[in-house]
Length: 226
Ligand code: CTP
Ligand code: CA
Image: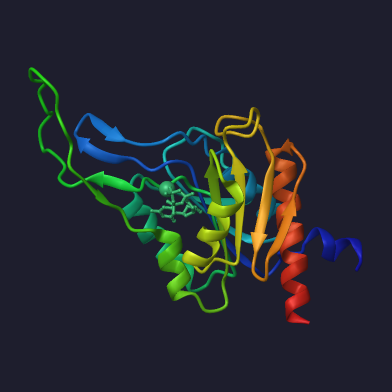
């Protein structure tokens, strides 16, 4: 292949990336969230745009610049994120779920600030929608890529997520490892796919890794098409 097509492997394709944490409100001044800098997701969106894709970045609250060529949609909760993804899903070729979506939200959002009281307190939680799993049930020709941040049993949990969510790829990283966590500028991942596909990547800057991940995945998808 010539240089141009290698550089623009995603031209004519639409890529939807989700990034960052979600916030689930408790009351007007408080929320539940998780550690996620958004860096890996923003790097994925930047790489997709560089490779020629029409790129939609659906982002939870983070303070990162929008990569060049990327259209960003800002969302807050898991529910908002689901709606934004749904709006672009039918026309997407690749959906990359880098976001660290909250698994639970408060069952009710208090209208007024909750006042402290003596003794302990509890917040009743309910499950949010599993966006990736829902997309996995709806998907037609979209390539679905999930991420999994694990502290232990990385391979086992990643493979379980691949099948449970009907994803095409799960990109797993061990967040207990130094320099491969949430705030880091570097990451080290292993990609799991169908038919026991498994490929480990070296530790590298997230932007470079994002590029290599898309190259690997587009090559593999092209080999299925031909
Ligand atoms: N995900 C999602 N919607 C959720 C939770 C997770 O779309 N409500 C997606 C994430 O964006 C990620 C993948 O599912 O691409 C795996 O997320 P992860 O939190 O690792 O998996 P869970 O299924 O939530 O399992 P657990 O947190 O118990 O490990
Ligand atoms: Ca989770």
